[in-house]
Image: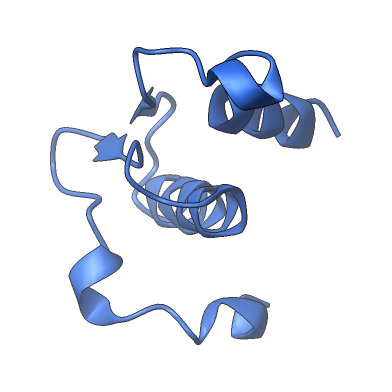
Length: 77
């Protein structure tokens, strides 16, 4: 199911008991992949809530919080 995420190294697997991931230094594609992986692991453990940390500053060239917008759009689908 998650074979498309095989490019990620084990160091990126940041889901722990706190159900919180920090993706603020990742690119959009990597951030989405990490969020999907974290949600998958969360569901496997029976969890119901995941905190996702994204950058607090807006990116002036791209019109705002690019990663945050991308994650929200992906989660709506």
